[in-house]
Length: 390
Image 1 (cartoon, rainbow, N blue to C red):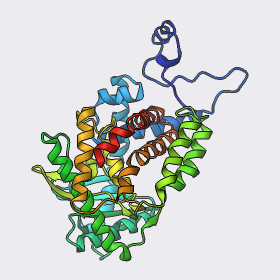
Image 2 (cartoon, rainbow, N blue to C red; image 1 turned 120 degrees about the vertical axis):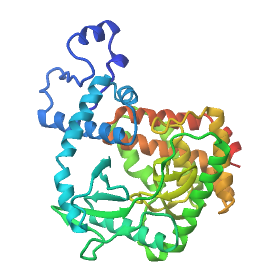
Image 3 (cartoon, helix red, strand yellow; image 1 turned 120 degrees about the horizontal axis):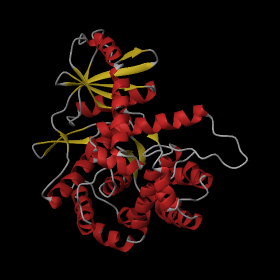
Image 4 (cartoon, one colour; image 1 turned 90 degrees about the vertical axis):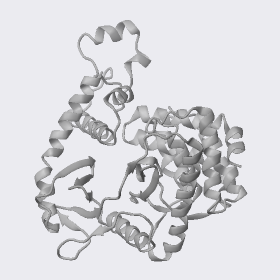
């Protein structure tokens, strides 16, 4: 079941009448002649939505923006955050039990993301449900750290192991890197050039350590022709037309064989790149790292600056300038091929279609719609983007 904003489909008079009974909540309207959706399914959908809201709250998104994003009132957002906080507080005892493996059971613990807790002032504890993903992440951190790349150093448990396991979950402790994510900046050109260099340095390090790490091999083109297409078809092409989708994928397919493939971060945004006193201080979160086209990281990062998640106050004109500086900064460390530069618009379009399909799969319709708006933004400005990154 998907929710829809009543303002988009109902007459204003009817919306005002309904608001006399309920505001900022889901309201299920059963179909004619059909039984109502199961209470269990409805509750599961609400639980997933509330978990996403709390995760975004922990990441720093304000109640007002969350209310706009999920078509809820600010009071509803605050109530959801409080409920989720209480649920996670129940985890505090379990976290203390886990920290016993490091002799830190009495340390102060503060949740900073849905799966991450700060321990004291200089440690970070992260939980995984997938041991393979955990071990791959640990190997990446270990190898990069050995190359003097700034990543959080693993803190072994008292028994010498790199992580602890409890009740089917896996936990590892690392040193907390200095600084935090970049929330605002004054010199757009300077930070853009620096981010290009930072991404290039990570790619160079990945190239050097590829033989030591079993990276998951993925293909953006295969994803577009596989589960992304299936998801779009399953949604009845409600976000973009089949013709728009096919045009974007055909553009990617025409150049895909010329695009260099290597290990990439895959989740490049300011939240995963730390800064202290305006200077870069480290990389975090390699959970999605994989082998894919390397230009994915550059395109994903630039698209994030236009999304609701970042909201750094960049104008459209500034974004084009920013894109050019990011590509220039990257190329100053690692040469970009003409094919990569030419592919930037179609890669961006496919990334946003992929994001729309993902958000649809988790019932986050607003985010899916926002991703399609960015898809159309890129599609309508392909020439401007090509001019900026060449």
